[in-house]
Length: 165
Image 1 (spheres, rainbow, N blue to C red):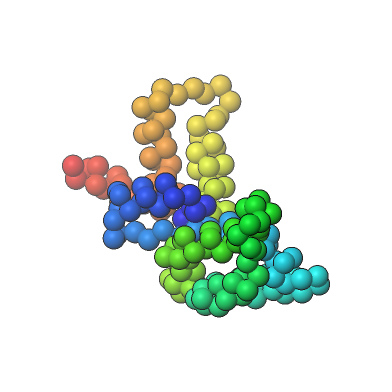
Image 2: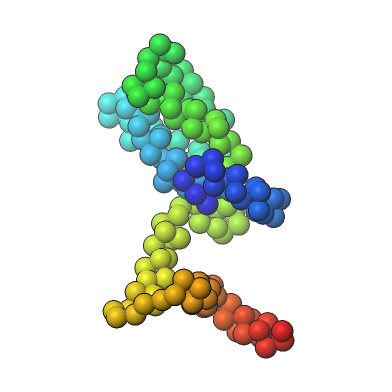
């Protein structure tokens, strides 16, 4: 999961290939939809319009979202910075295969990166930023690996594999 930056998806494809699927963080997609909402939803209806699009994404109705945006796209002569609907459409269109929120939800996976992004506080910083502590880079990397194993409930498996090796 990531913010939709092409380089992240490229790295996942390069290193993990068909073993992984990349999902754009739902919050980031909603930021684009929220910018388009005043034009597409108009006035008081913009909140309702936005909620409808979010629900469509969560239930696998991506093409419905494109139809809701399509007729409101700004003319090509309008600068991109003044064309929130066109920006939103392009952002989604360039990431069609990275928006399968229905499958992620069905598989019990998160669709937002908030939990992942906040993990640095309780996984990394809690141990590595102890007052007065300092680390060599290679030792910090080892400590981080241990913390990640513990956070992912792989502690016993990790030590069993070390013992077996």
